Length: 310
Ligand code: ATP
Ligand code: ZN
Image (cartoon, rainbow, N blue to C red; front, top):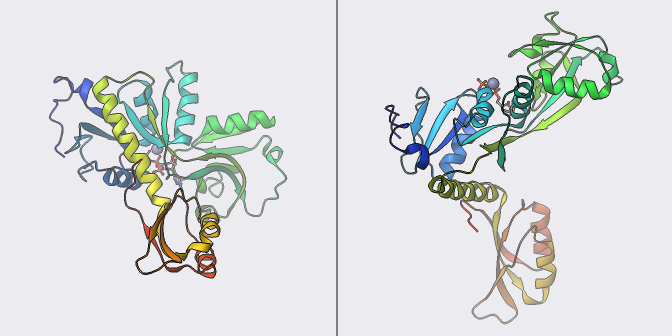
């Protein structure tokens, strides 16, 4: 990937090159880059370049703060963006208030960036429900998402807007509670807080501008969408192989998780046993293997799948 030398706007690339905004550096970055790599999109690891061209495909990558990604898509500056639903929804509400355009398409839900937006209070506080927060100060980076929930619950509160270190606010005397993103809950615990209410669950999504793309770009987009889907389904899928008694094939097929149309192959020198190969679209647990063995299957192999198409 080479750096952009201000060439992108004036050589017709707007019609041909798919421009994607991704988080420059943060919790979505590694997974996004891995998805690109696994999908065959080669991107340089030099994070200092705002815009870079993929080496092998007509794709440009714009590296920005995640908060800017929904706006870049809604303002039609980029074709696609990868962002958390939490940021997408919060930005949409802010832009609606500001009278700005909020149109976009959700192209694909991605299999990373899972987190939840939760309310947490000091561990020693009693908790009966959202009504406990009446008249209280709540620190958050997501005032609109919080306000929506509190409005529905009919609870009045004061929001303290913090864009970082939200979890220290109660201890620092800045707020009575917080509304922040949680993944494991460990950060809350180490700050003397307990999670009491989840108000929103989120994952990363691929969004696109709500306008048809130029045909050449649409063709690239379709290819990439198929590759992304292929990478994501390969993550969970396994290729299962075993030798099995013909008489037990029906029972064996019934317990294979998410397996479609297995291949049944004759085994040389055997009339009562066959080889069975199948792609399982779900995780394969030890219990399933033990059940297969109990049905007489032998040489059971479960192998990961690197790529999957169609
Ligand atoms: P930026 O500098 O780009 O503004 P940021 O500090 O706002 O970054 P990150 O903390 O990198 O954002 O999180 C980016 C997104 O990752 C979140 O908006 C959320 O969708 C997702 N995410 C996944 N897991 C977590 C988690 N444990 N805590 C916070 N966010 C998470
Ligand atoms: Zn951010």
